[in-house]
Length: 169
Image (tube, rainbow, N blue to C red; front, side, top):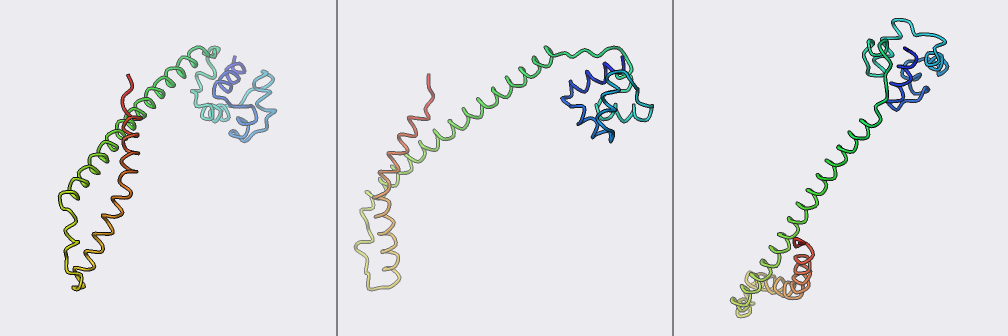
């Protein structure tokens, strides 16, 4: 009975005889003899064995331990189902965040375009002989020039992103 319990619990924990032997600081043949019923561990070793197998001594000495493979598969299946649900939730949340970021980017680009149109490049009439206004004017002109060149490309990408991340029905 003890030999069958040691073997069943060791296998249920996914340990080989060698791995269990290493945990107990004995040779593999000792584990083999215990499982074949050719010898038994002494009381001190029985306590160490129960700790290594994370099983009470009473279970090791008690009735035959049956491997509950169906229960293990059901538990694993339930855990996998929960993990899949969590991954689906993360994917949905990530998609929603990306969707709103793309929408916000489109709105920001449109607002900046409207502001630039409304302002009609006021720095073009500045006095560039004054060094302070010249530097600010050149900087503002460079930013506007860069924005006008890049914004249509970014806006197109954002619109495509909005359509790709929309909720599918």
